[in-house]
Length: 304
Image (cartoon, rainbow, N blue to C red; front, side, top):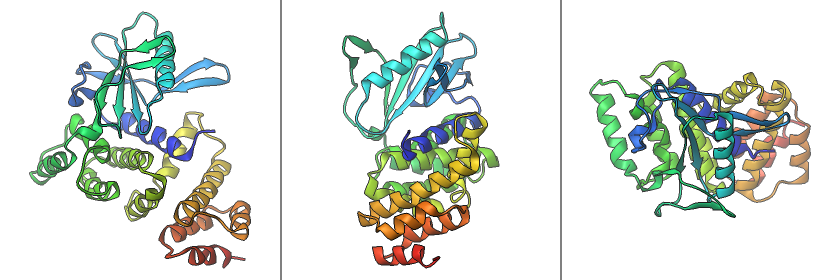
């Protein structure tokens, strides 16, 4: 089963690419066509198995296929090569290119190898980009009343992965308002991708700070539930109610462990028995904001 942070990244990027008009990664220096269309990122392998890439585009004029992968941690060359191969098989005869966006590694290009297999991929080193300078530029664009281009929108969504002189969650808090002038669905797409990418890139002990920031945003609290609903519409999630309940239980326990290292047995039993989303949401927020483990436990056990 995919980890929650990976599911959030997948859904966040999917929402972004579904909403951005002409999301060509040329703004990152990738020699991608100027005009692209978004394809389904789900590549069936067998009746019960599929590869899901982070983004899949087709050049409008030349028919080339561009597979986009965002890597937050240690490089998984085998997975990247597997995904590239699956896309190439799904689109026989088309020129298939893979673009890897590195969210942490600031070194030079990786040679992607797995056994005897190798892959020449386009590589974008987001963590080496001047995020502070890009944030200042985007602020000027918005302040002058100019519209954000598709390239600006992609840069805004990936801004938390760039190099900054401040914490990632503070970058999200500073950058998210720049999307406020976009159409509602596009604003949600940008903020969802921004939050999901930041969450995936952060260390586990840092994620509660980001969750607190997202919870204060107008589109923050319901953000990931909305993304899960998007996944369900594509047949990629469990039944809505059961899936949301399970995910919210896991989120409460995950934050409790990240902040206080262990979950008391009584608290774990209470969370695993809960079947109301509103209660689980309230517990999640209480655990994020609690000053210590006892206060967090009291907030959950007070319901009994």
